[in-house]
Amino acid sequence: MDEALYITVVKAGLIVFVVLTGFAYVLLWERKLVGRFQARYGPNRVGPHGYLQPLADVVKLIFKEDFVPRGANRLVFQAAPLVSVFAAVAALAVIPFGDPVTIFGREIALVGADLSVGVLYLFALSGLGFYGLILGGWASGNKYSLLGAARTAAQLVSYEVSLGLSVIGVVMMAQSLSLVDIVEAQRDAVWYVLFQPLGFLVFLIAAVAETNRAPFDLPEAESELVAGYHTEYGGMKFAMFFLAEYVNMIVISAFGATLFLGGFSGPFLPGPLWLLLKIAALLFLFIWLRATLPRLRYDQLMQLGWKVLLPLATANLAITAVIVALGFAN
Amino acid sequence: MRVHESLKGFGVTFRTMLQKPLTIGYPEHKTPVFPRFRGRHRLWLHDNGLEKCVGCSLCVAACPADCIRVVAEENTPENRVSAGERYARIYEINMLRCIFCGYCEIACPFDAITLEAEYEMSESTREASIYTKEMLLAPHPKPVPMRAEEPEAIEPAPTAPQAQ
Image 1 (cartoon, helix red, strand yellow):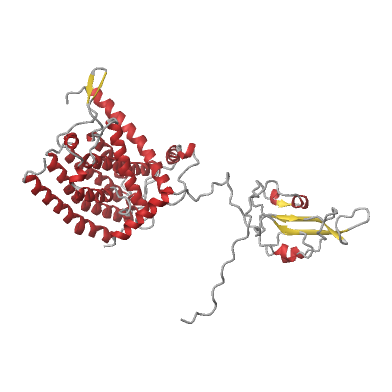
Image 2 (cartoon, rainbow over the protein chains, first blue to last red):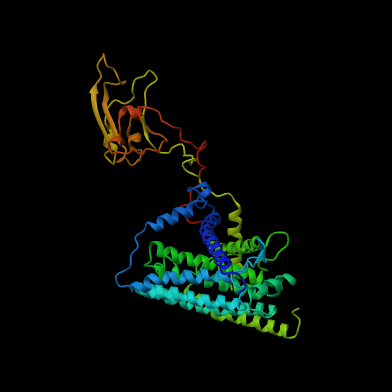
């Protein structure tokens, strides 16, 4: 609040630019890594070792036909990807990237907005992100898209509950919802993954389900519901949904790194680099899961969410609450 | 819960990530072919320079894809091309119709035609894919890597069920 507006705007622009470029290379890295898990190279023809592949993909998507299906609701069809992208990118505002730095004599905090309710803001945005998918599926004018969107929405809502509960343990220990305070609390003590192993496990599984990643990616599985809610989307609109999914993945990895792995704190290296390494480690885990596990059937997915994760998260919450109340958490 | 089995799966993927990929990077690296690989045809000459092919057209009769065209001509004392009475004046194979089955090689009584290892035969027009006798007599333009050894013999499966 006490920063000049232009500084915030510059920070926002920089973070969004870095994350969008990073998204393109996370995409490439995923393809190469999944290739390596399958004993083959990923893309390695376009540019040196395949590093210009994202550029080739973007150019291809730009040249595709931009159409709206006949039975579709035109306005909502075009707005839905924008809602998804907005919700994904806006979440970057509260992730702390490092300690405040001093540039040209001004002290600038390396976080977009240090909200005192940072955690709640992230959950609100993921709720907003659901709108993007549901509207996209409904506005396509296609029964399969609608079904895909409904299944996706149900899956996301189920796992959101467990995600929230797994995070409350950390919040109780840090006594704050602000992400910067949580990182500070871990810097004084020790990474919360050691105090909350069950919470971290539940968080990871719920995060994989929240971002529609394998093995929970039935709603967008190619062989099942064609492509779920984004069946009718082509070209840049599809690219925007894709971008929203991957930026969601990056944001949830950043969230997990901040809540459980200490965020930007760490010896020797600068803060943002530590955060980058932790996000990279979590993304590697996401990609590893995708390469290894077969897809869960929808009823197995829902059972896991409600009958396994929710009790585990609640148990974790109860135990943490007792420990904190008895004063052992300091 | 089959969690243990899933964890073993993670070990498999992780180990696979650490090993060198099995991909052979064509066109910089090519898979070596086996010795009896059926690629482009080749017409042969005797050591004294005469062609082995006498224009008997047995290969034409054997070809299931009907892609060989042979027009024979008598050998004259002035123009002696082959070792027999006749020679093939026109010998053309349409590579786009050929199925590379090797029946022409089996049918030829003079070992005049064999299938060699070359397989890179893209052309830009259909006419350019009709290979003439001169092209077929010539050796391969570029060498194709070949495996040094024959594949190992596989034990034949038992035909009768083993008495247990």
